[in-house]
Image (cartoon, rainbow, N blue to C red; front, side):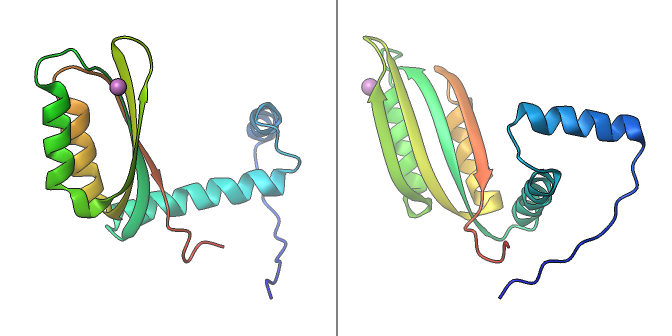
Amino acid sequence: MKKLVRFGVSLDHHLLDDFDRLIAGKNYATRSEALRDLIRDNLVGQEWDENKDTVGTITLVYDHHVRDLTEKLTDIQHDYQRLILSAMHVHLDHDHCLEVLAVRGKGREIRKIADRLIATKGVKHGKLTMTTTGKGLS
Ligand code: NI
């Protein structure tokens, strides 16, 4: 069973005002829930820095008419196929494709494949979202 612990936090009142505005804008019901998410987000960042087994998504938007681009992106994905759990491809319009890859592995390896895909000439926008396996996170 989870044991809850309460603790006091001393803050400059301006900083607390800013925090309250921030969390109201994000629809948090309580400061506690907002603080828990901030802590978890930092722990997830640490997982990535410590190169633990972790999970992420890589999002790419590109014009599939750019010469050899689709082949290049596919080649890179085959090079790292053991990291890719799933891939979703959406034809956005006549020219543009959206690709979302779910990836799992060491933080360093995932960053490497994300950097390679995003830096490929013709990719208009790319983003790595770092998340977690959820293990060891309360
Ligand atoms: Ni497409």
